[in-house]
Amino acid sequence: MKFDPASNIQDLKQFGEFGDVNPSVTDSATYTFMEATTMAETFEGKQEGCFLYSRHWNPSNKYLAEALAAMEGTESGWVTASGMGAITTTILQLCNSGDHIVSSMTTYGGTFAFLHNYLKKFNIEVSFVDITNIESVKSAVRPNTRLIYTESMTNPLLQISDIPSLAKIADDNNIKLVVDNTFTPMIIAPAKLGAHIVVSSLTKFINGKNDCVAGAICADKEFIDSIIDVNTGSAMILGPILDSFRSSAILKNLHTLHLRMKQHSYNAMLLAKKFRELNLKVIYPGLNNHPQHELFKKLMIQEYGFGGMIAVDFGTAEKAGKLMNRMQMEGVGYLAVSLGYFKTLFSNSGRSTSSEVPEEIQKDMGLSEGLVRLSIGLDNDIERTYEMILRCMKELKIV
Figure 1: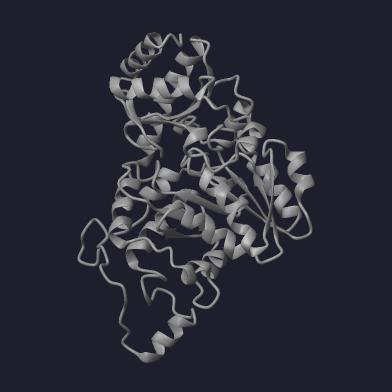
Figure 2: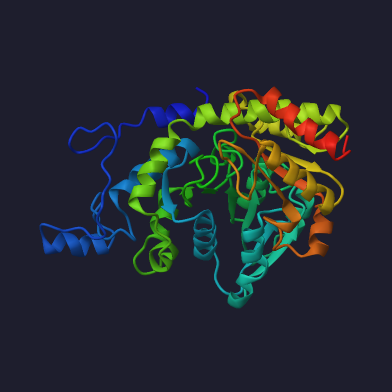
């Protein structure tokens, strides 16, 4: 039977203690015990299903974590107050002073800043590689390497990571493969392809409404238990806990994710084809000229499409800026960072979400100053949207 993330979520039986079809929101920071011995055993991690303190676990977050683990096909999960909270918690749990990480050079700017700048204070070294070059990944691994880090679809150049090959390198070296699946929820299931830990920003497609910031870690039970250990767990000690009310809202939105991903993908594919017909420098993994198009087809759950992200290189930051201003005025969408919203969002990556990456490294990774990243919305009439974009480009003599 094929892996179906949407059906896995649908099959969950989660309801409130009073019979409410939506699980009740637990509005409490701490929890009482009937016996003192039970409290002591909970602190020691010996009491399954008991809640101690919301920084550790609460019922609302557990409902969401279980649904996300079902979606990713992992044994367990934990939710955080941001995507960066998920990433930093995971990496700090896996690494100690003197350790080494192999990471994709092309990655979200906040992640890059954490790896390149912040980890230096802990004497943790990072080698940045072209993640699409498997041999370069192999050669970067050292005796003190603890993990390989990548994104299923990299930000902002939309490269596709060969997760099975990367997982083999990790397994051969007894290290972990950590995959950020923010751009491709439901489309790619990294854990089913061999990844050991999957992190995501729930802020984006999974929640889909841009009304909250949240993250998730999905992995085996042993790893999730380790991050919430009261003595040594990075999640428990650093405290990136998600609010119960936000957790409950995200859980509701999760049940429409399969429908939304299909529409995002449908709209993005149509626009990408139209842009290619205009001879624009368009990057979209659904186009057959994308370097990893065939790889993506092998990895993906095809009914959800190739995703809602498109990148177009307009050559210069000035030209990109003028076009984005015009598109916002025309009503195409919003000049804003982030992605996965029901309206189209666009930004100049080198000067926004990848601005933490030094210019010389931007050049090394092939990030043009004129690259515009578009998160395509849920427009009902995407042909109409294309006509708006075309009108903007003609007015600025781009086409």
